[in-house]
Amino acid sequence: MCGLSGEVRFDGHRPDVAAVERMTDRLAARGPDGRGVWSQGAVALGHRRLEVIDLSQRGTQPMTDPHTGLTAVFNGCIYNYRELRATLRARGHRFFSTSDTEVLMTAYREWGLSCVERLYGMFAFAIVEHDSGRVILGRDRLGVKPLYLSDQTGRLRFASSLPALLAAGGVDTSLDPVALHQYLSLHATVAAPRTILNGVRKLPPATVRVVEPDGRHTDRRYWHPAYSRRAEHADMDAEDWRDAVLAALRTSVRRRAVADVQVGVLLSGGLDSSLLVALLAEEQHEDLATFSVGFETEGGEVGDEFAYSNLVARHFATDHHQILVPSDRLPLALDRAVAAMSEPMTSHDVVAFHLLSEQVAKHVKVVQSGQGADEVFAGYHWYPHFAGAARHDAATAYADVYFDRPHADLAHMLEPAMLPARDASADLVGTHMSEPGADTALDAALRLDTHVMMVDDPVKRVDNMTSDWGLEARVPFLDHELVELAAACPPGLKLADGGKGVLKDAGRRVLPREVVDRPKGYFPVPAIRHMAGPVLERVREALTAPEARRRGVFRPACVDAFLAEPDAHRTKRGANALWQIALLEIWLQEHRIS
Image (cartoon, rainbow, N blue to C red; front, top):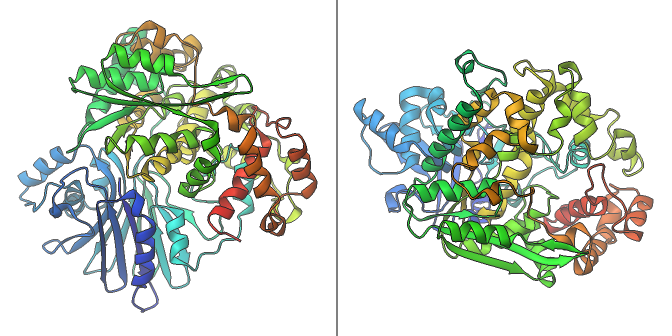
């Protein structure tokens, strides 16, 4: 985990190094172990370093190789960097470090843009060609590592977080109505390339962008797996699929244990994180550190799952850390979590992850986390709805079960200037569902969730919250080979056993049955779900602030109605509607966006 930033000028002027310095400083939490800034010609780069691989000064960034004429900044980890290094050495290349960043630069020199297809990992990077002035930007297949862009007159700026771009200045901070529509319809998910701000965009996952010295750019999407059945799997039965999934997950967990520091696990006690603990324990990781968080009960809802996480920790004899957060800590914790958000996120567990990460970072620098399994293996309760849907009805079926509210309802919530004329969220879903390469409605829904919705909700959530404490989170369920395998798996095997059937079958091979067969859980934060106590006061303060009224996003009658009955207004899927609008306003105020 690191933070990168940069500016490219297209108008003949030198880059604003002071602006790059400000972006770099805003990324300090992502990389507390080192800082560097580099400038040459029309380009300036900044970097904050978290030392995970090659702890020596030879791994410092921005990294320049005078022999190749390249300079790079990198965020993430290339898990197969040792294998790539050996291949490149056999081809005559020499290395001055043991860093995966140098492997990236050398791989680019050897294979050009196609080098990304050889990278197994999570990453965002910028590579500068000294001679041509060309800049290459890249992002990993599942978008685990972020890259935000601000295209301004005569220049392009980029950074690992949206707040870092704000620190540089000159950003158009007006709200994007289409993005706002997605935020209110898709559980606060704003799909790449948009963000909630008109002046900031995101490089899409699995994309390499070549930026020419005159400002022109071309994008190449280098990975798009097919969600269809393959001939090579035709003879596989349910046991074969179980064994294949377990073998692929073992490989993924092993890859994500590559580090020059200790690797722990965020253990919720559910199937997904428990599987990671089991497979790491198989690898004989001594003193494996595991971490769980819980909250006080509110409104009769229990706020922890310690019974299950303790069971797993005892079974595998881990060095377990249990953290209980009292409700009176939530308002301050909420503001700190919002400050860490690159974009507004409404999921309750964002606060849980932030508080957990604060404590985990005192013990380890790297953790594995179970995000992504529900999207990849069809674990959510709405997926059976697609089993009987016709392929051509996939978009309609998706809107029925996934959207927070229909387009017509937004007219009662938003001021007219903030409401797009068309159903922007339905347009987004329709475009993705109409793409070829998904055999069934369920295949199309899983593809959309895995490659769009997940990237800009749970994956972003984990990255933002862990990185704010200098903690690197790795997500084995998003190994691209495992995702490709799951995409080809027959839908019925994924839907079986109440969802994630094939993964549960794999889990029964290595876990206590009471962990596999338990009811599905999540990171509950009851005080937020029920708008209890001090959280409600923080919400009321934000929505009645003068800047909220001046902003003119939500109709005052809507805000007043939500505040009058804080726990009464729910989205179609049961989320608190007051929390949804309040979180956006709190985020805007926290980042001083007028």
